[in-house]
Length: 107
Image: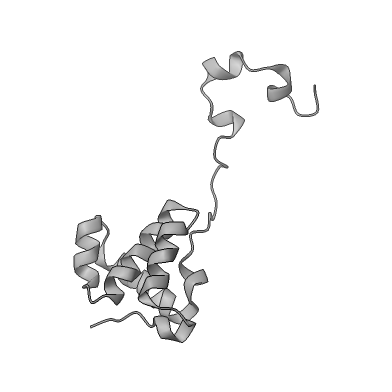
């Protein structure tokens, strides 16, 4: 059975819960909450089934945490179009945008 090695990082089960409640991104909160449940004796496969994740994903979070600590499971945006980019707006919205919103450097 897999276990969360929170002592290695100077943390407790409660610290994992606190991280789950205070993490800035929903994906980080999901990961810390899963680790908290596993640390309390839950099964990684059961946690995965309950959250709708594949068991290997949850086990991957567990391994990353055990090897790299809390920073290793924090969500990091790795690519793609930036959120709320001007081009992601529908044309109808762009058509009514102010000139300063459509052309950089114009006020």
